[in-house]
Length: 428
Image (cartoon, rainbow, N blue to C red; front, side):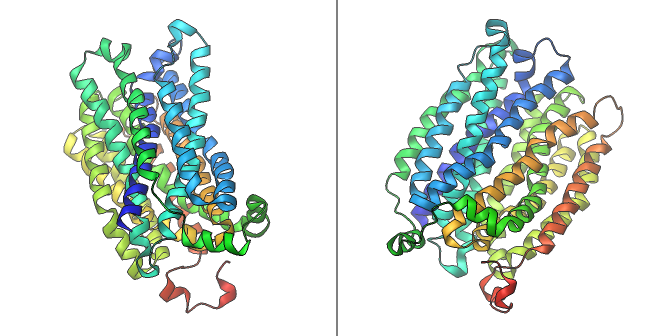
């Protein structure tokens, strides 16, 4: 289990490095380089628009790779998704700017960002199922939480590289070529991840399905026909996690540097410190999910998010590093209370023959609802006001309440508690 968990963690860390480095670049530099004819706010919005495309393509990636995972095995998904995302990320670092290519430059960004999202949409389902389906039942949330640490590691790597570059290069050098370095580094990371995953075995549950010839021929059709309500509920439930995370990790960077005049270095350090603590606490929170229930932890995290958004915005607006960090930390703790257990929760909600498709589609559809729109909406509602951007806090609070309602409609899957339910009350 240690080797399997490590390989899943490293793979998701590499894929999310690729994904997050684009978000950081969108907040710091892509607007003026690829949309120079726009105003500063409009350029940021346009850059976040290309950022959002990666989320839109993630559900499509979960459909494509989910079909592979349910039909041919979880293991092939891990290789194909990592290869696609790595190649697309390296290509982003090679795209000439608007000054060289004109309108073709942002169009190429859109295409490559779409391919990034396509690969990441398959990565989560493959990595999580490989770990969850190998894990012992009573420790499933703990072991399945290791792929959930990957996003934190990827974020820290992406922003650590960006922080070193912004600190070590002049502004002209960073805008000229420095911002491209993390994208080029993605190629080396992807190669290392592929080598690490080459020794992994297929999961026992899929091997049993294959031996009995019970794989789904059309997993998406089965999910739509028999689990559509579950997909919508899981997407709505997880939307708040995406909204909170990308508010802190993407929108807050742009808001702090452009509106509050805080240096990008200070903003990155504040966000990175909060994300580092979140990543370190992930397995410990997952252990609580093994003890008290997946749904219970998700409800607590949602409620905490709804209560914390206005204090977080107020602390951000002070522009004082310690207070901003505390605001970000509270947000990350509410986030991980939910997302530490969802890697065990979502697969348990779906039957094994359609699990890769169902869990991944629900998870990545939540990314569209919560992650793709949030930086755009937050930038729009915070423009042109001198006081704290309360509209951002109100928006996030509403999203949290909607997610809370969705989680309330889902069943508990913790084995000790699920056994007490009537059989017909638990989804297949």
